[in-house]
Length: 322
Ligand code: SF4
Ligand code: SF4
Image 1 (tube, rainbow, N blue to C red):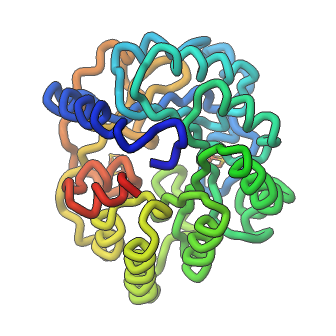
Image 2 (cartoon, rainbow, N blue to C red):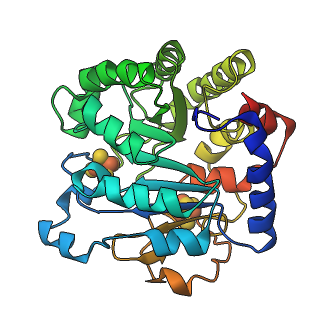
């Protein structure tokens, strides 16, 4: 586990909770989308077009949903969660209410000063995840935030020095295949983690960064490099070995099994409506959640899809213990 708040013996209550949730067919990971507003300008996501008056629909508190679901892991995401001035109160309330729950936040990092990072950390987070697809100004261009990569690369070592657990969320695209291993190595050097996913055009139809068929051999070589890195340095890359090994199969459109998102992972939108994954419409109040049936959708290979299918293998336990 990345968070210093947890010790190896905490695996026992977490394992007990996992067994209880799976037996009851309840989600293990719940994402609270605390706002849909965002001040980035990514070409592959339209959340930055969310009207400012959507703020009026945002729940002041997510604590009731946290108590009822009582999952193993809660992620605060958006949109951009740090746009909410009351984010610290939202996190602190949930942290107090749900024991043995790993709390994370996903941010683009553009407004994450060391002081703000410390404030959300002190509110009860166990991990802060930052999007990082390139180690240079290409990241600024992709996100529409000048100076973003330099800011992230400067603030993360300072956060690590203060004991905060940090993870990069990195999307594998057509133009960063040679940047993935350097990002992983950089994360290792600064004591951070990396979670990888593959670019798809399902969010807003932008096919600009889809991996091309002629790049598939390069992706297969990349997967081999990542698995070799995992064998040498467990605990840096947080994807399961199984998830990484399936990437070529997904890209070559050979994945036929249904998507099980909405079973072990769900998303709750700013107004308290639940959805099976970030790219499906929210369809009912979270209190009415009664599970989502597997669905024949192949539109993405996010972790909420891929890791939900991953078998519990020895390498997964090694990842956890690392
Ligand atoms: S991908 Fe993230 S940072 Fe980019 S517009 Fe969407 S919510 Fe904002
Ligand atoms: S494959 Fe699953 S997680 Fe991905 S968009 Fe479709 S339903 Fe959502």
